Image 1 (cartoon, rainbow, N blue to C red):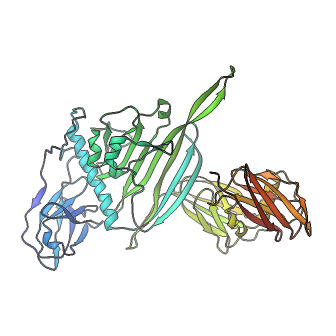
Image 2 (spheres, helix red, strand yellow; image 1 turned 120 degrees about the vertical axis):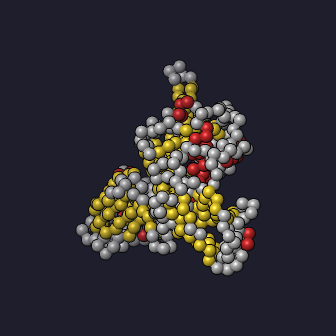
Image 3 (tube, one colour; image 1 turned 135 degrees about the vertical axis):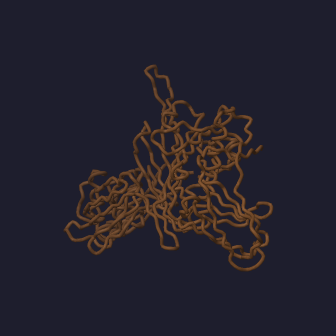
Length: 555
């Protein structure tokens, strides 16, 4: 690697000072405004990092030495959009050393600090400017890492998976998971190192299927990544008037290897890393129209913390369908499909009481029983998600931080809890950012839900209760489809009769009987699929009996 310097660090000589803690304030030269988000690093004589921290929104920082003072030689300050600064120090005894600093804004982010030798990349006139942007992007990323270390907070993260239509334009279904943690971490971590990505690409084969791999920000902004990728200044984008882009692409495309081609966008006015976008290259041309790729969006908090706020991967593939033509010849057609996976940070709180909330949707719901009385202390949740809330004494509940998308409003019933089933209220809504959706729902009883299942899905004409609801689950609690259910009921002592109603479970594993049952009767449920068979005895209890059938998993 060859380095060329276009300007030097600002280095200030300092006398021998005594301290076991270093603190100070960083301001912007010229304006005197406090400067947050500055990474302060304590270096030894070999320039190894002994400790690091980040300045807050008041420009203040502190570094506890913890016995490392004798080795401390240099205090280095870096921030995106500013000239790096170094101060020589010497620590020999206890005390507090105050080191204030002023940092000078770069007149342009296109002045190169270093240029790396890349023999596999074409010579470009903008090479120096591209490496200048690279340096700034790396500095910004360092700020995100140090902020997580130095100023951890509690974070609520939302993850999602979306199935898209054939054109990749509309969401067909969406699932949302909620993750609460007590540390500010990255949105996701790449499954390989940057060097491995450069060597093998961004797709591998696991369990006889192709798997897309997503890089994280650390991967793209590492020096190892540059071993196989070339940089360029991206064309300006009218939709990004104050931003400049750093493009990257693989130096050598190899047949059968999937690489990425993307842009790192830096806001020159705010002096901040905004986002990284990329697309997969080297795929079958039929998949390119679905725009496979990814996106990472960063946001700087007022206290200097930088978040990877949103991240997304669009994955594509092809399903093969057998088709018989008029000539009776069998052909196979590959149909492309797309799926989105990603997440975003919904809420962050810090130990000092400060917090930040993302612009997401809110649901305000008033729940009543069929007689109009408030449905108190009922658990309300949204379909295919971890969103849940409990109604108060007025039957009112609120669910916040709802990702955009369509949701059915569900209600839980204790009798259905053991079979992991919720009751669909028939109400739905579409969440939008910065919008509160208000609605009212009528909470059906478990009996109402089973009656509807018998009539609408199974074509039964219900008798008076008792009724029976069954769900077939595997040992891991997942529903089992394709299981044929039949039942025998004990009429008198040792006098068993076969019930006429039988059926086969669908993908939800559910089945119900709303006729021909007698109160308190003993039943034997026979569940069969292929050579597997389970006989489950049970006794009817009350007007509605809810039971689960444990069925073995298929090998």
